[in-house]
Length: 187
Image (tube, rainbow, N blue to C red; front, side, top):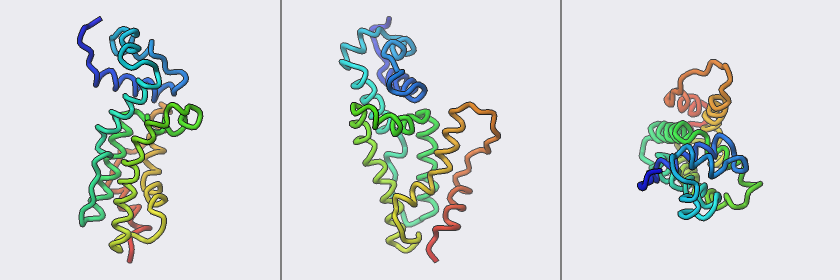
């Protein structure tokens, strides 16, 4: 086993295994094997599976473009950036956030990751709310508006991870945002 450990690679592996298998079925043995490190090294560095998974997911969320959304004067550009950032995070991290949302109620030790994710989610809500305040989007709960915008991406992500034999069109953020604005742009 190598003396140098590629921590980013280790975290990416831990996130991938978690996304594929869920928390209970994720083992440090599989993470270590896939990452090419000794399992004992994981325990020396992170103490337990929960700490490793929390650290890996928190690191992945911090690196995601979704964590750095900003609001400009262009509602269309902001929504395209938001949708693209979500799609990139979903593609890069294999639906780990979806797995986290399903697993967190059963495994309290994952709540720390959710606490790390919430500022990113609230920032995305802020993008919607800002454009509502400016009169560019219809009024209403900005959290619901965000979910309406992202729902197609969530479903396509789940379908892609299911490996179902489906015909799924290529993600077009401009078309998604245009459809969203069709029903949610303020007059």
